[in-house]
Amino acid sequence: MAHKITLAQACEGLVRYKMAVGLSPHTIADYRNTIKKLFLFFNGEMPFEDINRKELIEFFAWLQEDYISNPDGVAPRREKPLAAKTIRNIHTNLSALWTWAV
Image (tube, rainbow, N blue to C red; front, side, top):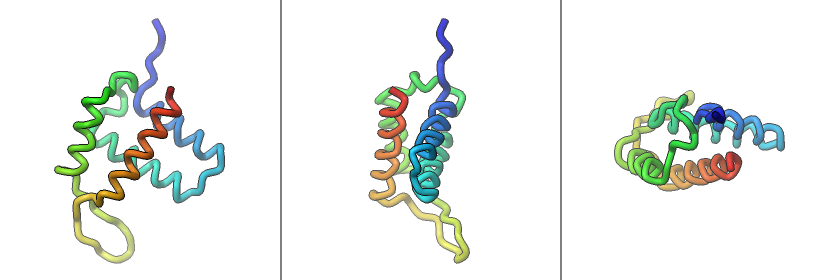
């Protein structure tokens, strides 16, 4: 029986790969922020291959309808929904994850 890679292992593999090809620390941080949101929705220990299209649609619906960001930084900022551009960036990052994994 083949060992199934977990979501957490796939995400860490992608980040390590992106670091190895020389992406900027800012870009790596963006990938990690996407992964944090993914782990809030999915269990990181679930088999990566068990995440299907329907579940990803639910994830993106959750990001748009229920997820509230809590921005950090020096100046206090109010909680707010994610911007459409942020959600598109998350989609791009997850597309990279699936492309890397396949």
